[in-house]
Image (cartoon, rainbow over all chains, first blue to last red; front, top):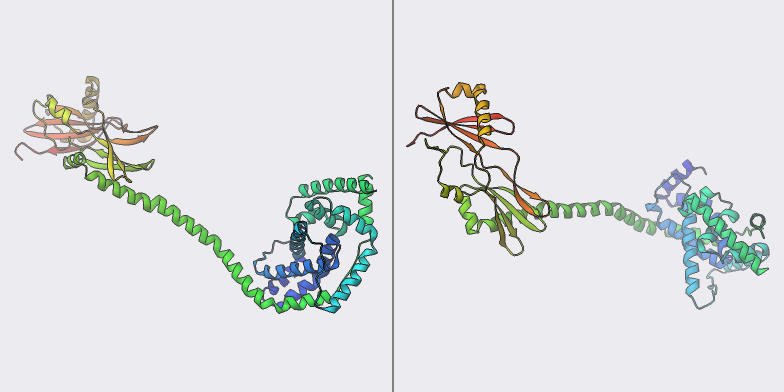
Length: 184
Length: 256
């Protein structure tokens, strides 16, 4: 979908649920994938993805086209939801126990998916180290290397200047190196 | 580990490509089922957000308008009413003084009283240069009245300082010369007319604000040249600063 097509669909989505469904179908995988790489837990990723799209739906009528892909806005919402999740986790004295899914299919799929993740040990090691740097640095590293975004795109997603993104990336990588070296 | 090695590791990491179709479909259905409800609240929020800024601007404009236009005018009107109740001010107003300016400075209202232009139409005596010294010292020259709105009273009255009341000889000669060479004056004032008096007008006053409020004379000086011929008096008003005649006026004869 190019930018012009996307712009038209967004305007249609404000009037028609089918048009909104097109946007959802286009971007669900990307957002779920991003969230999963940030939290490395399928059930949490599902919840955060659901919250992301729900907020996107509620905010659709206030959304203003700025000649930037809609998915960047979705990434921003997802980043904020991830931040909220980590903040709650920090203050919670309980371990994160996944809620019982009401849909058995969803639960079964989630269990299979979690097993699949455990096969990617190199990713999990990196992800564990990434979680130890600052939140802003986590965002930038994940978007850059796991989502393969360019600096310019990361700047648009996070609403920051490119210089700031580069600086966060450089600092984040330095801290990551130290964390990995310490753990070895 | 150096940075390049780390970057290589990050780029080469095998990333999980997981898709949970059941969750995807379930979420899609939930979102579309909630579309109408979300649309209603979303539209309302969008309208409120759009209206918020104009409403805020209107409120600010109204507040500014009230504070800068309505409230000051009300305060000025109140201050004039308070000043007019003061016996001294009442006396001056009866003598022909008028309110030249009103201003709000530091939460107080200052009212500038300008004396009437007593030289216009005033008959001069043939021995006009000698005036009664007592009358001169009693003459109202202007005043600044300070009014406390909150206390509803006149808190201070400052009288204008006595000004220089006559021209120097050299200035008088200059004025006479200007009048002689003014074509309009030549037509109306016969050559034989006698100059009874050259009076300096009471200067216009203004409120100036440096560190305090004062009465200061404005720069323009006016002279009144009173001519007498054939039992008739005429007065010519001249703008001395610009060296030009403003007008000529007939003065009423004695007994008129």
